[in-house]
Length: 343
Ligand code: NAD
Ligand code: ZN
Ligand code: ZN
Image (spheres, rainbow, N blue to C red):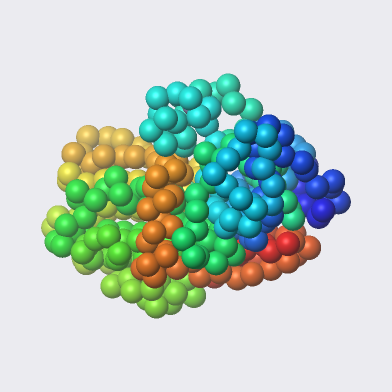
């Protein structure tokens, strides 16, 4: 089968032929319908994220069960499923609560999940190490569903934790309207009555944000002018919740400068920015959070939101062979919504 492989930091991914894997005891073989192309892969490809290659990329996966190993029951060939991406130990207290994204034993597990240290879904088939990592799709098209497992789950987890602050009089700032940000806008509208401001450096992304229902859009190329415009909209209370899906120094500084007292600054993007602290900046009462991915039950909730038509990943579909070109387009900001590779 064809697969898109991470080889080592600083090298483009390689498209190679591999033998189709066979599921061992307790494992599931998945026929991949689609694998989302996440910006985190660019961090893995370009920076040293501590992952050793080679392995098959793709950590936003959905498809159909193609075979099960010994001891796996309750699933049958052809069942459409999404793969829950952050693979924990499955045994610790946190994993048992379904939040494998915060597994207590993460330091002793050699992979972050399929596509992030071990073989993922940018291939015709993928091994899922345990059926506990599968979530049924409830009628969703698996190609459309693939990005839900990260591009929607990650913002869902961040937003759900902020819900007590997202009242009708609150203003929420979403920075970075790419794969995660375009889902965040929809999730905010599905779950909250707060006023939404979308921010990006790319006017096309902002036009997309408008289509997705953002009340205000701000281009942040001029950081000072953007901060003033955002503060003018938010009023004396300031931004109640800032969601930074870039995480670079300029965006972290922007968010820290516009949040009000008793607010929440959530940094999701891995852009390498640092949140500085001095008395009352960020303002008193601000909770700074660094959420990672989401829990399995939250993925079930995300799939329910999508199955009921309240959120939808806007996808650009490509063939596996186009992976190198797709990563380059993502690097240049030329993907609208989420790219999905289809074998
Ligand atoms: P993406 O490339 O699809 O979107 C990024 C968006 O940010 C683009 O619209 C781009 O125009 C915009 N942008 C870039 N620089 C900007 C700046 N300085 N100011 C304002 N906007 C800017 O990326 P994505 O797949 O949505 O991922 C976003 C980030 O989230 C990445 O850093 C990724 O690694 C990270 N991520 C984190 C988690 C987590 O659990 N913490 C999970 C998934 C992704
Ligand atoms: Zn990701
Ligand atoms: Zn665990």
